[in-house]
Image 1 (cartoon, rainbow, N blue to C red):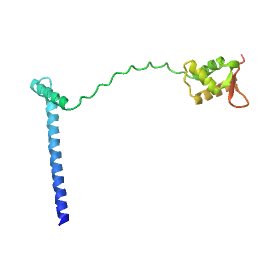
Image 2 (cartoon, rainbow, N blue to C red; image 1 turned 180 degrees about the vertical axis):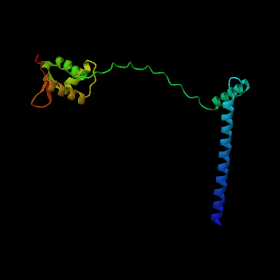
Image 3 (cartoon, rainbow, N blue to C red; image 1 turned 90 degrees about the vertical axis):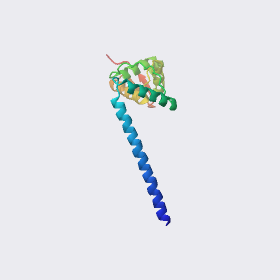
Length: 149
C-alpha cells in the first residue's frame, strides 16, 4: 500500500512537471513567433514589444554596461636576435661589462625590456657561441668581450 501511494505521488508530480514544461515551451514558442513576425512594418507589435520591454526592465535588473578599456598600444614586432642585442646593450652598462644574470635582468628592466631568465640564458648562450660573451669558472658570472673584427 505504501509503495502504491508513493508511486501515485511520483506519477502525479511527473505529470504536473510535464504539463508545466509543455505550457512554458508553448509560451516561449509564441513569443518567438510574435518577435519574428513583428518588424518595423508592424507598429502595433512594436508598441506592444516596447511595453513588455518596459515591464521586463522594471522587474529585472538591467545588465550593466562594461566600460570600454583603453587598449594598450601594441608593441612593435619582436625580431629575431633582439634579445641578444638587448642583452649586449645591458651588459655594456655593467661595471667591467661583467655580471650575473640577475644584474643583466635588472639592467634590461632599466632599459624597459622585461625578458625572462630563460631567454636571457638563451641569449647569453648565443653570444657565447659567437665569442661575444664568456662565462666565469663559477658558472654564474658572464662577461662581455667585444667581437674580434
